[in-house]
Image (cartoon, rainbow, N blue to C red):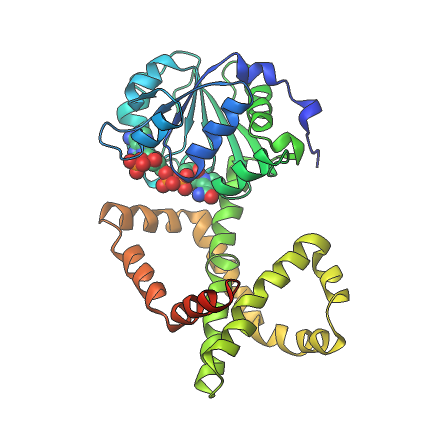
Length: 327
Ligand SMILES: NC(=O)c1ccc[n+]([C@@H]2O[C@H](COP(=O)([O-])OP(=O)(O)OC[C@H]3O[C@@H](n4cnc5c(N)ncnc54)[C@H](OP(=O)(O)O)[C@@H]3O)[C@@H](O)[C@H]2O)c1
């Protein structure tokens, strides 16, 4: 796979565009600030009633509605929540967007699953930084960057690929690496990983380990350190050295424990379930579920947030952070 860096990107391409960042949340604020610091002409689009309008103005940006911004800009960056993309595109962007403009996404979902079918004259780009907005901004300010994936979904003007690379470099990702992908690969892998590894499986594993120890009479504080705090040490080691390298940094006892326990928890049935999750992502069933929950006002998401907040592990964590400042 080719990896691209600042030297491969022409920043002048994005600097020559009027860029409107639609949304000023997690990604929107960080991307807008990085773009501006890279010399790009950026405005913000938010609904009239948005509470983030004041923050964007305080940060020094001009703020428009999305319909207004779509008529002014020649690169629209859609950084509203994925569930809102279809409505924002059909009601506010498509009727107003200039001929031959570009629309850029930070996640491939809306294009891959057909929630948006862009007008044929538009360039359709993906630049997906691999991390939250806070990290995108702090890395940039530290003179570094987050790795980003980039792709072209539609190249109406013949300049889409260069513009995507240029945009990624303006975010700071040319300092770390910009990797080519497709809308399908990025969105399917991301939706799979969110469920099967990162936000779904790992927290569930932590809860289960904590509950097992506490049920057996261990102190919640010790269970917390063992099952939650040490995940950070593991993540740091894996990030720096890979999994085999991590094993060199732990004791023989811990390594022998890994040998005994790992495949009893992640069994052939777990792997079969992962394949089922991937199939549900690819068939569109997962996205249908997300959209159904969103249109009902997120009953499932709200219930699961409440369950997570009420779990006893949260009180232990709060207590330990108060005592040690570190847990
Ligand atoms: N979060 C991440 O770490 C991450 C990482 C990579 C990619 N992404 C992708 O980035 C995109 C944005 O995610 P996010 O987490 O940054 O979203 P977010 O924090 O929920 O922010 C969404 C923003 O969109 C605004 N908005 C809602 N309706 C709008 C409209 N009609 N016109 C203009 N703005 C509107 C919201 O306004 P209010 O402020 O009024 O609510 C809010 O400012 C998604 O495609 C996501 O998949 C996210």
